[in-house]
Amino acid sequence: MKPIVQISLDIISIPEALETARLAMRSGIDWLEAGTPLIIAEGMNGVRALRSEFPGVPIVADLKTMDGGWLEAEMMAKAGATHVVVMERAHPETVKMVVKAGKDMGVKVMGDNLGAEDKIAAAQRLESLGCDFVIHHIGYDERRGLVAAGQACPSPLDQLREVVTTVRVPVQAVGGLTIEQAIRTPEYGAPLVVLGAPLTIDAESFKTASGNLEDKLRLICDRVHAYAG
Image (tube, rainbow, N blue to C red):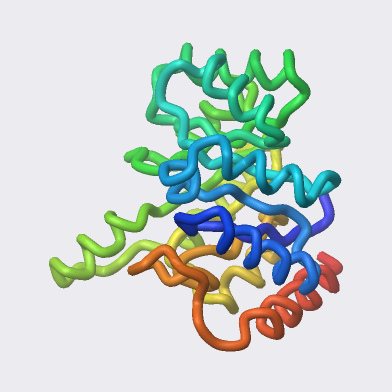
């Protein structure tokens, strides 16, 4: 899979999400993500708004499904999502139902190993249950809690190579990466580069980051798309 760049719209209003998405598309972003904060604040209307304005662009709906797998995946697919996210910590039947809905409705399933004690084994389980992608994820609260306790903060890069080599599906690394680290994840075999909080979104306020974001995104996209492996 060639490297792609995805922006996570971890924003809580549709107008700002659309404005940031327009900026991102001008910069060369490949995929848009209706981030969890946007879905919590605006529901499926956020996904519908993105689909209406960007009819040909892949859209990830990051609802982080934990139960009701088929029904939630159906809602996201009907709203216009092309990719949906299910959590490995959910019951295996939930993952199976999301995968079934994905097949029924023509959407891809991204399995997220957030919160798993053994993230490598979790990635293997997600693949075995039929997920099309694995998200290797160190959580926001997990990182902040460890830092507050004076402990070393784990990085998705710590086990990324092991996750990549243990599954055959494409892998995405998320959680606390710097922009430079995110750009380099294809070197680890993880071709899906995701940019969200705190790289392009202010994690403390769920607003678009300040500064010249468009130029920053363009440079990131140019570097990732030039990656030759």
